Image: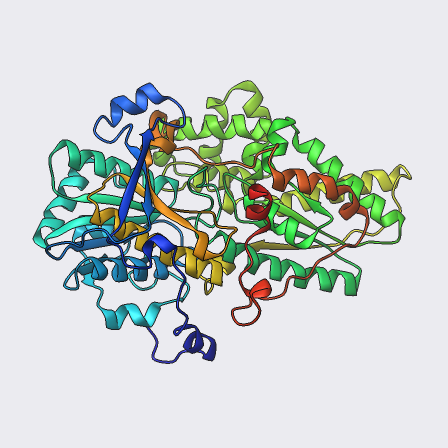
Length: 552
């Protein structure tokens, strides 16, 4: 870490995160076990794949002091996947938690993500190191990575490296794919009688790792506040200059929680929700017409400016694109070697086009070549299209502009249309965590330590009742198998944690559709401003609109 720190970082270093009452006396807890659990879907297949961990009960920590460990425990921690604000506080919570179980317990951080476990790259995290990173953003304490832990060879290497360090528990801090891998690892070690526990923590700014027991993933609160501040700044500019439509793409590959939360915080003129597009089977032409109509209506009132929010995963939810992308994922998984041997771009595009179905070929052929290339060449580590690389905001801005030009020729539109394009993603992933995320993440880490202390494996740390003050939060853990279902990956059915999409009957979406018509024609912008860390609780300890409306 740099020896020079900002005044804010210096002040934040002294912030003491709040804990649920069951953890205030340390991670030696009394537990209450619930009923046997089942999977989110495909229960029979999940049970076959996870015979040791399937059906485990939900764990709740109760007030009172449990038994401390008789001997110290060595714990390994892995940061997996994209960064999210608060990760350092999860690690600090684990550290303080295992020290409360036994003062000689030690924490080892595997460097660079899951690959550090396999390649035996690690460093011991001492109090001197931990104290430098409390309440800071980023994952730079040990770095992160996107290596998937899914093969027996990886599991065995991880076992060997852990046993060398006398590590008897691993904590995987990650999203749905990372925690799926944690579940696979836990099951493997239980089946092989390997004395290594595996615990997960729910991380993703996308907000799509949640259920009844995981009310939100950490980092979502902070990231949405950063984006909403930026959106509010742009709204001020739009309302001042009055000459641009700002098309803003927001992170959220598989769900629109970020876009919906930012819309609820800022009141844009247009906010597309991918899940609604899929439910209504809206075509690209439908979306363009909808956006153009709002632009034209505002222009009719002399308002040739506005703000549109677009989720980065939108293109996958448009029916004709969803079918195309599904075919491409399977095709490029099975034809990877042949595709790689083709030397020119034109050969690659022709090869792909000839392998597609008639309908998908038609859609593929209608796209600009740069979009075709992004669909074919940019793949994530799981073999899927990297939708964040597809310039959806540019595609929509151009198509809306073309539609308006057609209407102008027909005498249906008389306004002016100029655009500015933005993509907010990395700006929010490593921000200094809000008070909520600082508290929540520390509580998750402490909960992970408590789960280790009671000998659990294959569990995810859980902290609930998050709209209430931390003094009323409930902590515990849930078996990861209860979040799983089967999905198509790399052309095969694989067990994964089911993503939580925006619910059409949920409070956040219902509130949005109640107000969006008014927001579209009026300039009802809200300017949230920057995250506040010091001051009155009603300013500094806010929760997201999403949590408020879901819990209402």
